[in-house]
Image (cartoon, rainbow, N blue to C red; front, side):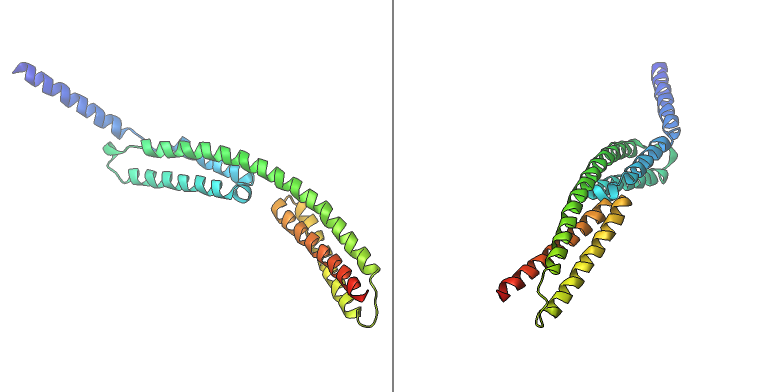
Length: 200
């Protein structure tokens, strides 16, 4: 009988100890802050623009971790378990670091592409300007030439905007505008060539 009582007492003590340990668990604030800071660093590295899908996935993981933290806060103190939240926060931290590296690599590639297309666009504008200067300006072609000159001026304006974007390190916007300027100028040259062919 005494052994039974002693066994019950030991079990009770162990149980109470586990309850106390559970009650002492606290939210993983350090990991939460680290995950948020890592995501912010990824954002500053350009992840929202250059690794959009991966960045959004990391954000969703952080939201899931926060939801789990909130759920545990609503539990009785002795039954709270932050293991799942900690696992999610560790995933956020790892993902954010990878996304930041990926964004930096992609940003550099887009910068290089923008500079390359900038050269193409400038050459296309110069070629279009030269073609227009030598275009015949007879009675039937003046209106066409005036329209093409307006198109070329628009291309030059877009090119200037692209240069400003490039200087501001808005590489995606710069690349898109350099391409538009190049394509518009190329179309001007093609129209001048076609018009000259018809007159011949």
